[in-house]
Length: 173
Image (cartoon, rainbow, N blue to C red):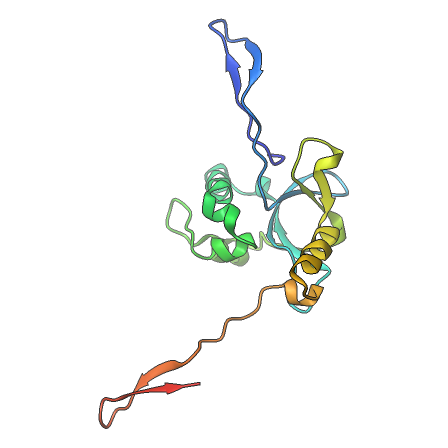
């Protein structure tokens, strides 16, 4: 679960032949700095709290939900998402339950200081960075403040309504 996918090539006797397929490393995965427990990073920052993030401990989910969550995380859409939570809102568990809503309503999502999360993107110490430092690098790269890195509420633009009297459409800002 520590941000990798292994496959060992086996011979007829069931013993590995020593060659293995390249390991894949995924975004949105990390560990707690205190005890190395795996976490999935749902949002890298919290609005108005740039030094906090939202994470879940996938090991607390039942096996079916954990597998479904990991498939979504590993999908191309999951990997393309800046914050996994933006994609989870569109996804459902195998029983049809919305992923983000379930994780929120059942209190699986925890707010943690970004300094307490280590993002894992490689097999050794060189493949790890604390989330607070990663957020600073992202904000610098995007030329925005750390506060602007968090998700913002989207406001609908030019809401179109129909005039009840004559059926004409009018744009409202």
